[in-house]
Every structure is written in C-alpha cells, then in structure tokens.
Image 1 (tube, rainbow, N blue to C red):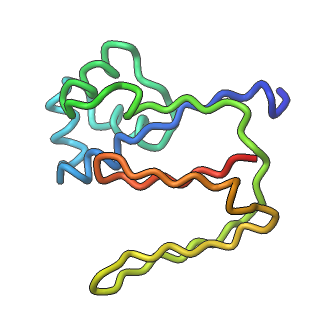
Image 2 (cartoon, rainbow, N blue to C red):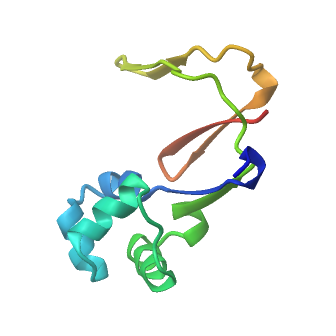
Length: 121
C-alpha cells in the first residue's frame, strides 16, 4: 500500500478521558463497553463501531469529528522527532526540531483545552 492510499483514523478518547479525570474503567462503564475496548481504542489498535462512537460522543457531549479525526495523505516526516515539554509558572513550552519544515507548514489549534499541532507538507 502506498503512502497516498493510507487513511488513518486518530482519536482523542484518551485526551478527553484525562481532561474529565476519568479512569478507563469509568469511561467503559459509562458507555457500556469493556475496559479492554477502551484500551484498544485509545492505543489505535481498533476503530469504534458507529454505535460506540456515538455513545462516546454523547458521553463527552462532543461532536464525533472532534473525537475521531480521519487523516489522509500523511506527509513523510523526519524520523525520531524529539519533543521537549516543560512548564513554568505562567507557560507550557513545547520544543521540537523538525528539519525541513517551515513556519508556513505548521498549523496550531486549541479547541476544548486540547492543543493540536499539525505539520502540512
């Protein structure tokens, strides 16, 4: 399968669960699935069925599109990107070296307390 044919569905279940200070077990019980299913979803080993995606969406009161992101045409990025994250009294600082990437290639978005950094190429 070529890079152009790859479609990846990423999810933000772990981020939302942590934001709401829930355990995997509590989320699983709330949406009526097993804890192992939550683990598999969070790790990206599987994608949810439509009913499960809807149940999770309703539980977090968030659109499905916010929880499950379909990405196509993933650009080839440098391997082994090192990211440093640290916090001061007033800031959270994220530093990463991304050779070959320009400022115009980077898109930063903050939505519902979730920070997303995308690299377009």
